[in-house]
Length: 421
Image (cartoon, rainbow, N blue to C red; front, side, top):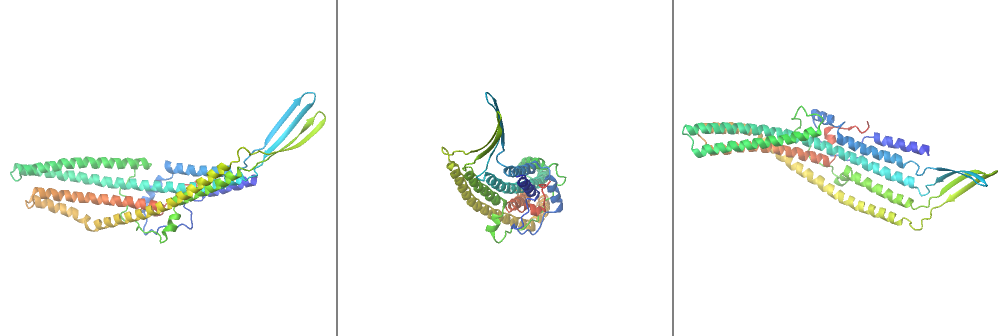
């Protein structure tokens, strides 16, 4: 028994030491670029002592401990001493051991092994979720900061516009209606400025909550991201994803639990060896006792375990469908947003500043009405803000896609999250 216990302990230690991403047959998305080194360094620095990752690792280690416990003998022996002083003095020492004749220990070990596989997949999911949240927080912060800076610029332009309109009104070059329009535009810019700063503060709060220290740089996310391409065999790819592996391992655990419930129905005997003295006579005896499982033969427990297994198998079928649809949907969504942002980056971004300068010059020279100038000014600012928001949507969709396809750690080139510490 000692050798078996040592073997199980060694197996558990080996399972914990193997990185959770070690899967030689894993189908992966073909990434055509990777995260910049400074982004990888920033994300890697937030992982080792992150509470969410540590909690996931503790849950995995608990599963390892459960496997170690399951591999140990089910019943401890009992030692009984009895002495009686009457007309006949009797002293008896009895050693008894209940025998696991139904194989409960083996079945419990099978359950624990399957649950450990599920726990490893759960750790992978926790890691992917954390990486996704870290990157999303950075994208919201970077975009929020740029939107806030644009709001500051817009407020300055509208203040200048309102001041110039007021002076031109006093000089008789503008009407009261046009002057009021300029003041209304300035008031609107004030509200937009406050809203942008508030949104940036919220984004900053998320970064503070997720990172151990506030990143020194905010512009760390690249605009060049992996192409949204999936492996040719989508069915095989989905089966290899940690969500499915977790569910499949849970089904294996339920299957082993059926075997455990069957083993619990066995009539486990108890052997007892006793020896002692009765006055001057020696006593030696052997006792065999069997539980009579007549009133409750535990068939209902076995049937319940089978029904739970059947239920889990049907849920796994639906989970495969849901995950396949989710992967295809996130891929298409990312592809559309990436294409839209690339088009905006190539055609729209470079013309905004020159358009603002030209519009301002035409209005000041009197070649453009105040209303047209305001429309052009707001359109230029809104277009720039829309570009920033579109890029943020692209970032978020790319991180969601990489989480769904379990490729976010590959993109970041993070190969060790501290599980083997």
